[in-house]
Amino acid sequence: MHRFLSPLLIFTVLAGFTAPQAPTLQQSPEAILSKAIQAIGGRRTLEKMNSFQLHGVMRLPDARPVIEIDLTTSRGGKVLGIMTYIGLGQSRFGSDGKTAWEQNFNANQEPTWALIDSEILSQKVQQMNWLEWFTMLPAKLSDIKFTGSATFDEEDCWKLTITEKEGKEQEAFFSKTTFRPKGRRTIESTPNGDATIDVYFRDWQRVGGLLLFHTVEYNRDGSTVTLKLDRITTTPIGDSIFTLPEQIKLLVDQHE
Image (cartoon, rainbow, N blue to C red):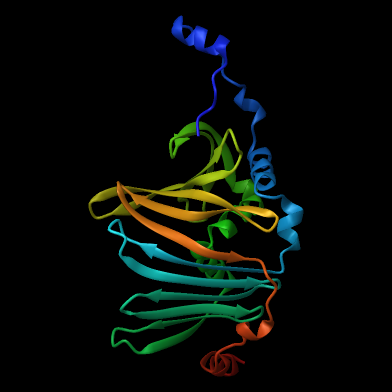
C-alpha cells in the first residue's frame, strides 16, 4: 500500500523541493505498539480470548509442502504444538500450565522426551505463532528503541529495534498507513557471512473481533518459504488436550 500525495505535495516534489518530514521525536515504541494492537482489534479483544488455535502448511518456492504446523494455546499458559515434517516425522511440545515439555527424535529416529523451561516454551510458541511474538513486544519496552522510518515489504513503515539478552538485535516494522505490524528483520551469522532474514505478514482477514494475517513469508537473502494459515480460531476448548504425556509424567516424578 502506498500513501496518497496531496496536490500541494506533488507540486513541491516536481518543483525540486523536499517536503518537511514529520517530527520523529513524537514517535515512541509505546505509541507505535499501542496503535498496532488497536489496529488488529485492541487490547480488550485480545484479553478476552481464552483459547487460540492455528493450522498451516509451510511451502517451498515451488509450492512443495515441507512442514505442517498445528498450535493450540489456552489461558493459564497451556500449550500444545505439533510440527509435522512431511515425509520425515513429527515433533511436539506443550505445557499443562505448570510443566513444559518437548518431544523430538535422536539420530536413530527414536523419540526423546525432555522438560523445558518457560522461556524456551515461549520461544517455540512465538516461532509458530507470530501474533504471540507481536503482542508480547510491549512487555519488552525497556529493550526497544524507535529507530526511524524504512521501506519494508514495499510500504512506508516505522521501525523499532529490539535488543535481546544475548546482544542480538531484531527490527520490527509497522505500517504508517494502517499501523499494522508488517514484519521483522534479523541478521544471522553464517559460515558464508551475514544473512538477512525478513519475515512478512500478509493476507489480513477477520477472525471474530480481530484482524489477523494469514500468510507469513520468510525471505532469506532472496530465497523464500511461505506459511499459509488455513485455520485460525478463538473458539473455547477443553483442557484435556493439554494433559501431560505419560513419558513426561515419569520425568516429573523423577525430578521430585
